Length: 140
Image (cartoon, rainbow, N blue to C red; front, top):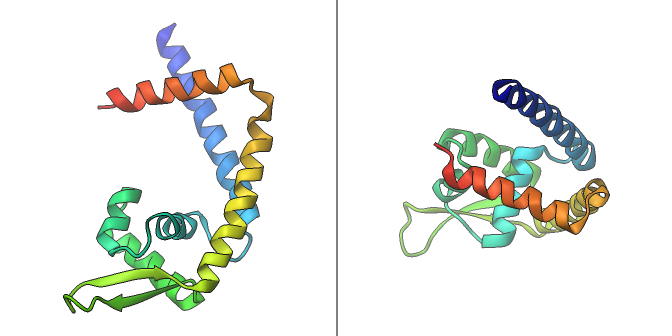
């Protein structure tokens, strides 16, 4: 019985995740993808960052961040520059165009989630959050 419920939960989670990912890509359009949005989000919230800090935050490899940031540089949404204190250190920074795009897409994204989660009561949202916290706190 428990095994069946876990399988059912995993199936719902997979369907939920794929639906959200697909919907968000429609929101982002051809401008960027979800990985690129994640980098823009970190730079918007945290300011200039090293690639290693971004990869740690997103829990992806440094080579993945290099690929994503290469694309974002070509699109004009971020810049890379060496720091004045240590020329070996490269900081990644949002451009004005990248900031404008992030703000616009983040607003659309927030509207999407507000609409999707509007079917849940405050109590149900709290329960959902508590269950996620419990799982993440004890995840092995």
